Length: 295
Image (cartoon, rainbow, N blue to C red; front, side):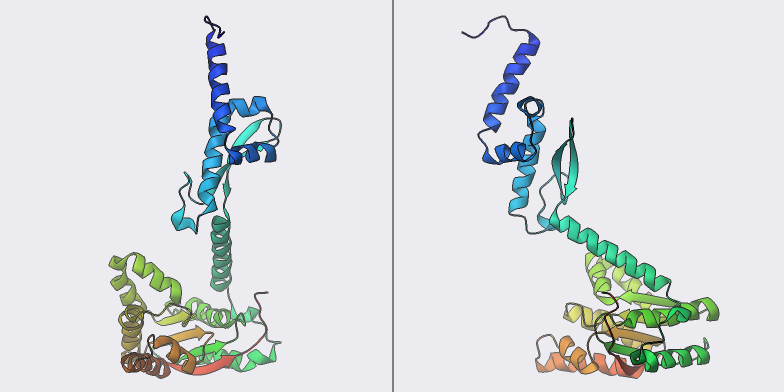
């Protein structure tokens, strides 16, 4: 027979036991407490939070990415750690770890690019000599009133294309009072799509800055809007006003033209050719094939 006059603590203990019995019917719950090597006493006191962990782990099983995350803290799971006492911490999921890795790589690259200087360029790689000489000549002959052509620098992945041009631009900004902007083109398009209200201001700025580097053109997903309304508008203005423009790409000019012709129909081919002609008017074409410096 159930004891009639139970104390409050006894009632609480009984209720906790009932809840635990329900939880133990869940195989995922049992696996969790076994994996964490938790005693019955610890589990009894922390049943609710442990079930929260189980639910969050279940959410993760069929998740395809951060955009699908159903957990309380996006990209994280409330997970138990036991070292004499039980505590819960938010552990990043695999998608969050991938995002953090990319963010770290991006931050490292931005720091490297912002600190690039011509004196730090590796001159021992014979594959870079032609490009380095071109950059040195550009620096020596640059004046703010100049209308010098920029460079379309294409070649192998990780060969240092962006670093080389950034080193030149940083020197021009520091020593010759040039206004410069280095934009990673795929990200520029993504940001504009996320907030169309900012697109026009950004386009105006990229049209007018003294020297513009459009980094990694050809890595973006091509849309008519991005190609014609954004890229085409910027390049047309800069070409008309003879503003120095640089590009880096893993694609040759010919490969870039094919990339920009999204559907390959005659109209798209004409629009892609129009972009390529603007690039040719703005730049000299040069290739850099070298070792992968990102390894």
